[in-house]
Length: 264
Length: 128
Image (cartoon, rainbow over all chains, first blue to last red; front, top):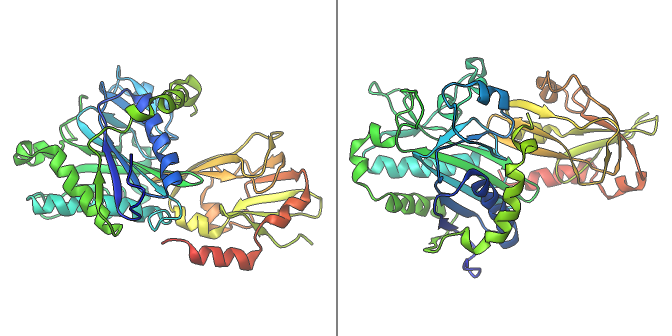
């Protein structure tokens, strides 16, 4: 269990791959626990099969009509943003109490996670930087897939010419709850299992990354995030979900309901 | 003349109107903090709500947030034009950007909300 004696920094767990509803439920449990502990908590996880997570208010009909993601299971996130094809990415959820310094301006939490990873990647030779954002007229919020959008702070790899409009490798989105902010994010590692050549992923953009230990990368990234919160990273060897299986099973039922998936 | 608005800690405002109904919206601070609004869902007319219950959701480019009822009551009207004109929220959050009208179950509940001065103090203390 978390070290309740520490008051700053970050607590993190790494979970085994799970189905979409269980992953969304675990993040909801994580948010409630962040409020109870009054601490930022992070969960790193994978998916037991390639799955598309839709943003909180994306139209289900748009997802159903897309030939690009046809046949993949769908789950709706509580957080906003665009659809993500999971399976070749590394997904994280961070839950932050609303009273925390990261619980106010939405951009602050977004930037601290993205800039910390960008700094770690730059040290490893990847020209990662935060995108300045595009004008609304570009129609980004009408695009189905998160990795086809560019919002301020999205993590991209600099173009060969030094521009900021390179390949996007990480996007995040939030659900602002009464007591906590839940932020979901995805680091694309490989091209996703869909017929689009536009999403390259970190390992294709920077082949040397294939030799990296992914867990070491995550620990280095989250250590930087924790330092921004003024404390250490408390990275748990044990997984998060098994110790909270009953709570997660109860919460997962809602994420399986047709009403939730079809809410828009 | 309508009363001065009161505020919930969750950044909704409520104003008791001359007809006994209460108009509810979200504060200019909250609208500005959310930035780039893209979607809004409002409640059904006729729905009974309790103070603190979610009565709608608003999505910006990166975040989905709940809107909470400042007091208990019945939803008697919604600003149906608003979801299609979300820029109104930024332009006139205390006027044309209203969200719903409630028939309060007990107007005494407004007494537990913040006045403008107390709300301004709350906003100044928010993490940035």
